[in-house]
Picture 1 (cartoon, one colour):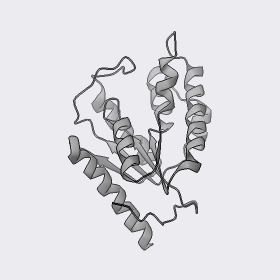
Picture 2 (cartoon, helix red, strand yellow):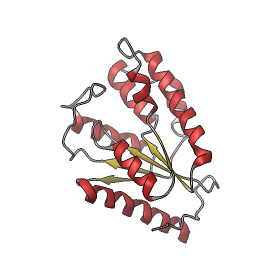
Picture 3 (tube, rainbow, N blue to C red):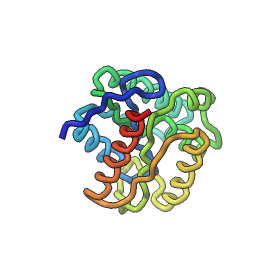
Length: 189
């Protein structure tokens, strides 16, 4: 079903930015791919995944800074290809969260950019999915902690976000319903 996405976002652009965020192993990439297909648009992959796959030593603070700039650049590259919606598989808020956890503080550039680089809607994926092992995942026993951190970070940004829970098709349909609700509200304003 083709969606009518002719609404303007808060920046006056026709591209609505949807961020799919959450703790490790909550299905962000799979959800992003699903939503991009459903809405006939593109999705921005997580830059940090490709970056970390190439690391030969533990991640450094400079690596976090590099991933921040890489995520911004990747999003910039995909934006012109978006069909009304740009689905983002995570955001650089992840850099802040990981830097805080691993190094005790986040890069100043990330902190400066957070209030300036927002998304129209954030889908916060719940931790109700089973953990999937992956060499790039580090904290299987801290999912509840990171879920709370995500709530805190999004609230501090005064972000428009919806928690998406459930398994399988139910999870996807809740995400679509959240986006459709947001689009209807924007169209009526």
